[in-house]
Image (cartoon, rainbow, N blue to C red; front, side):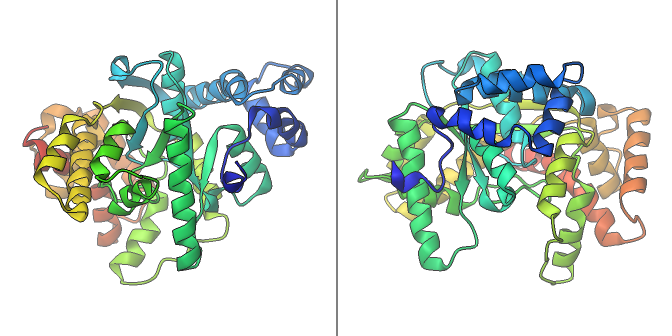
Length: 378
């Protein structure tokens, strides 16, 4: 539909022409050489020329790119909960957000491996300012979240986005991934912004909002990286906030963060799929008749599910003990693991700056704090 043309991915009928338009782009060649290091250029070029759908592009190219990323920058990925999903059902995946590209790419790889519907995924338009990146994102079934608009235009864009997400879920039977908040979590606190749920609700025609949220089948997703490859890059923003200063991004900062997230060391990764929120939504509907209170309650339910499904790594326990100057969790890590973490700390930040030191440690320690808050145990 024309009303969604500014934000939608390519239709399959547009994929081949889009691929041909970028096939000779230096970044596409670099991506393909990275993905198929032992393959002559003419082979993958021929495969691109014969690719006519997003699914084919994702399965034959993107999937293999992500496998190369995992091989070069991680010790592998584990998953849990995917067996609960139905292969013929579309879900609204609401996920914590740590990495610009990998969060949704890794989820799609896992969905593909489990024979499930891959997602259409939200991405901020600020991240695809370069023409090549916009084409690539549309080829990977990303839809745009328009930002930095005047208030009236932003309201209209949000309603349009909400209607598009509803169309994907309810009419096209396409699963959707959206982050629980705008932008990545900078401090390790995975919290759902009410604004995200309010935007999703704009497309609803239901008398009671909870009926709509039940119909779109919300599934909380928890993704955990043992090492955050962009941890040090988040420090300048935290430092500015600590000094009550407005943080201004450097030119190309988003692009550099994107690359660092992809290629930086992550060690182990885990993705957990939570349960479809059904009984929880029924309980909210019966308890509250005020829309605002319903939204607040739903954010808390999603937060609890994300935190409950988050896998804690030795780095989280080490950071907690260092931050709080305790030995509470020494049974959760080895001396070698602690030495490696402390070495990373030494290399990546100025430890003489207390704000940076505390911010870096808190980023890793907060998932432990949140587990204690929501579950009273880790």
